[in-house]
Image (cartoon, rainbow, N blue to C red; front, side, top):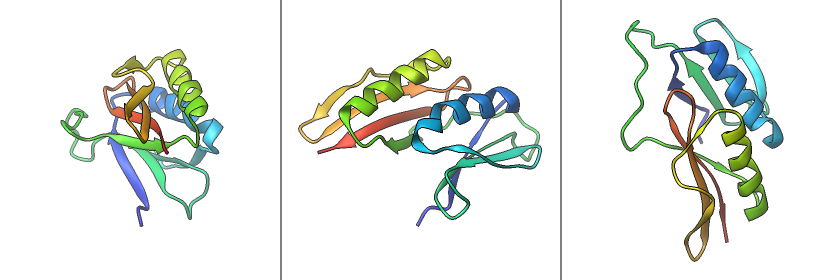
Length: 122
């Protein structure tokens, strides 16, 4: 149902590198880059993450309450992807761990401050 989600960035090259490298273990790669917006995903027919400089020319801002959530497939994969995010320059926003009996997640913020989580349910 979701085609893509867009987040703003102040540095396109840094953002493309961060998200491309981070999502590579999940099959993510740069699919389309048209200057001020780039799409990262496994295929154009699957949900994608877009990073862009704001169309209105104003500064990119992080949304309060907005968060990207990526299913990791297992608790071990949550741990490894969370560690990968940290290695790539993310900041911790809640280390990997069980949040409730059926939800395990690791929260981080990308170099622009956008919040995301790798998670596993079950």
